[in-house]
Picture 1: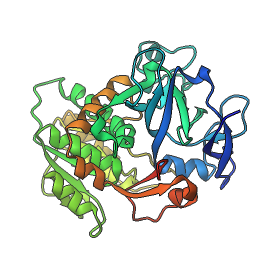
Picture 2: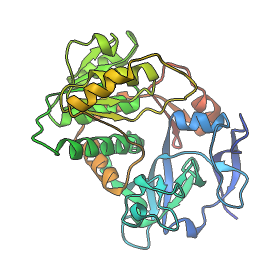
Picture 3: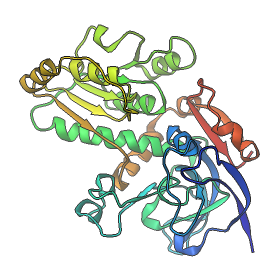
Picture 4: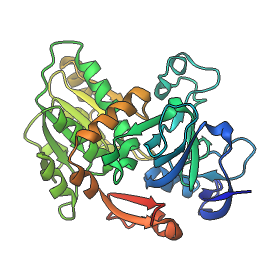
Length: 351
């Protein structure tokens, strides 16, 4: 029987990461489209699963294959949806089996009962294996020129959803946003800034790093880089995309938004910390200025398609510069070990 290499963990067991050299070939019930893995992006979610903080193996299995930022090349597709050789990414979240009202209409990113599943995270094997399968409706074809950077599609889908909802909320009235504040210059923040630039907005990115690649990456986009606090900024943004999850930054971002401002929270806070702030003053500002604060996570098919279009329009050299390390599968442990200086690390199946 053929086998593949797979990076796996035992969910809930800290530091159980390993490379299985004889993982079973993906069964056809995972999907009709067979894909050769090219690369998998690594993010904080992977680190948290490795630390044993969460994660759920597929039913009846002890171990979970990691990897949700996928890029592969189609080996076979009997459905004719894609052609052999096409670049493809697999949508991470699948709808719950009931389904809830949102999952029933393809809005599984807005699942109401929490019974959704996610590749490499919750109940579905991930993409960090030599070959994987995907159902046609969860397969997103990519422009061939995105071969070096297509694993960025998943994080781009997250910010594509964020911008989709920002614009839906903004359309409640005559809305002519001029400037955007993005807090955090990690992959999500930089990609959120990219989509703001593509919308013709004046984009400001705030991050605490004064050195390293982040300031230049922001400037190369045509955006402005700040290392002050949010409160010290000399403008009131029409849109805020908060990507840090840092409680002080979250509160300051909500306080800083201008009239009719929209604040999108994409960063997940760890909890367990308290902050002394004037909740009454924040409430007053939100009400009197008609501001909206909302949270956004994950993405549905529409957002994945929007993300693919955004990446295809972007400067490919700039996208490539987001990837600070490409690590072969044989050195998988190095890929998942955070240096604190990386922007995006990629596990490369072709090295």
